[in-house]
Image (cartoon, rainbow, N blue to C red; front, side, top):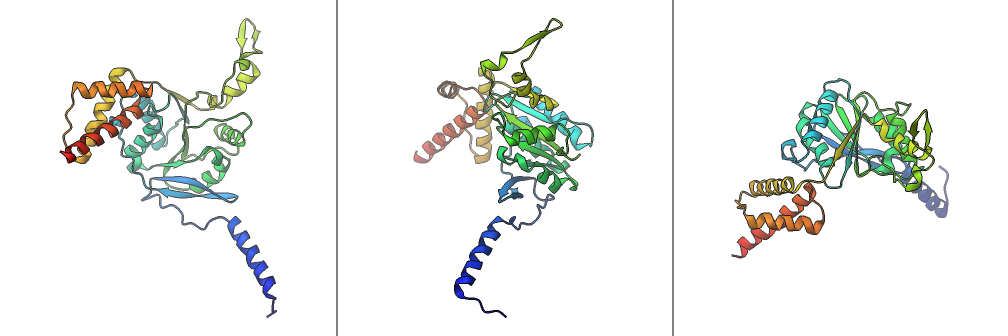
Amino acid sequence: MMNLKPEVVARLERVLSSVEMLLPKAVKPVDWASCHAANWRRHSFSGYLEPVKVTDTTSLEELLGVEEQKAIMTSNTRQFLAGLPANNALLWGSRGTGKSSLVKALLNKYADKGLRVIQVEKEDLIYLSEIFSAVENEPYRFILLCDDLTFEVGELSYKMLKSALDGSVYSAPENVLIYVTSNRRHLLPEYESDHLGGKFVKGELQQSEAMEEKVSLSDRFGLWVPFHVFTQDRYVDAVRLCIERESRQRKVEIPWSRELEQEAIKWSHDKSKRCGRTAFQFSKNYVGRYLLGKQVA
């Protein structure tokens, strides 16, 4: 065997270490029989599916103020699970109103029916074809979830998602649907100048080319499901539900009172938002203070 100088050996080791860092990480395939959710993790020039332990136990019954949205998404998901025609969905609207919670609740409801969820960050949408290849032969039905999604014009991930929704070579396999949540209905920022350049054709006003481009992605989702801020009564109901849930989990009784209700309403005013997230955050604060007071007493 050729004897190499120590400095040559050291250089080769550095080269091999560098090459090793670029190679895809060696990981075991996800065991979808026991794993209900996974994240796509980027590594070097590719990535891999990383199993996730589902800890969110939210049920569909616990989501208040979104009855119509639950009905639409439940029906669409059941169609998908039954192998029937179903649509990709865009869940859009005010922050904290239950968009991603609804998808998690659907997973909790239908995991035993074969539903699985893969969460993908916006920057990793460029790997859609690899994700599809990883699950297309699995005997499960996958929701590919991209949460809190917004784009800037010209992003590569925007073009990849658009192609996947459009049925091109990057289109999803039969056992994958795409659910996206966003605060924006059109997923792109809109400017006043976008509305300039419209023209009348046969008496009807046609959108400008800028607006046509901005709505072209959201148009590719079969379902648009809007979410709005709660009424005060709905918000109070959500607070009551959150506190009851905390009480059951901790096996304590926390009485409801007019003072508690008023405190919850003030909390929503301070947050400038009536929604499920605000109700959840208030319940955490109130229950924590209540139980701490009991311990001190």
